[in-house]
Image 1 (cartoon, rainbow, N blue to C red):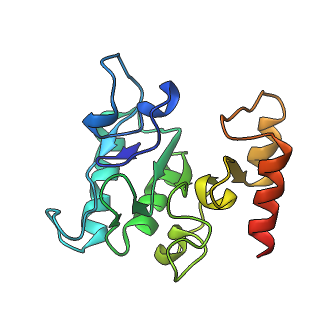
Image 2: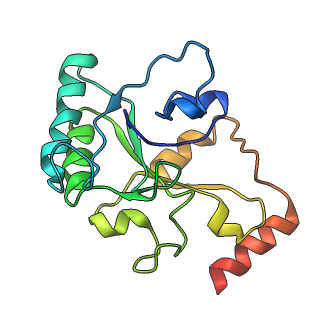
Image 3: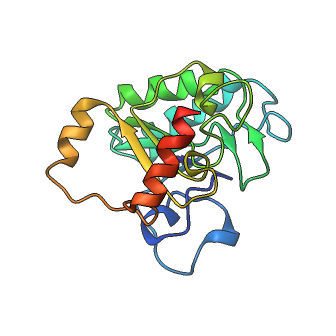
Length: 183
């Protein structure tokens, strides 16, 4: 499950989770359900995050088998217009997703690594702890680098697979990422 108006990249695997027509190609994309965007400015429920989160439960109940792999969202939608999610949305959404067996993924590629001012991560403003955090851009302070941080249990599963991202692995970018974290 991802959010309408969300952007998670335009690579083949992430395009299904991206829910903006400008970033879609005319190919079949299956397996992802797009939930109502909890936009506190232009959304149907204003800043009532829990009302928006009910669409997550309805998506699980009526659009899936009742079990989901996960939920990915930005805490602040970057490409979607720098939109903060309605207050209280992520705690309610995470609870519903976890009850359906899913993992909660925070896409912090644009907002993370102290880019929002008040917190190091965008999801901290919602008071949640995701199972997986994706990051890029900010962690390299302009150098091309990406990273995924997760729980030890999920990381152990990844040791049985090949992990790859387009912005990882070179020593110069890794040194830049390390320096950013030190500062």
